Image (cartoon, rainbow, N blue to C red):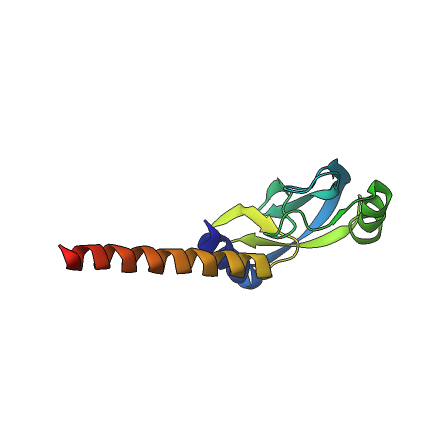
Length: 135
């Protein structure tokens, strides 16, 4: 999962782009894993090959912005993604329903998660080979 997210983040920087429009932006109570925080949510529309589409992902790091104060989160939305704002949407050419507003951004959290997963995998293989060599 983590490796796919990193691959998708990286690959999305080369995806084709289509003009779009922010349909709705709103705050949502509670950022994942954080108590008493407000996350921003963005819904946008775009068209690929004559087919209208709607998406919600800004990037693979979700949410894109959180704040303890709802007013600050709402202010960030008004500044960056107000309803009606024209946006450039990057979409996956093999799956045009997969789209980002901020493509090509691999987060430090994604890198850290992948490195931890890699270390556990290496440790597991080393442990398994040590057990086999003792038999």
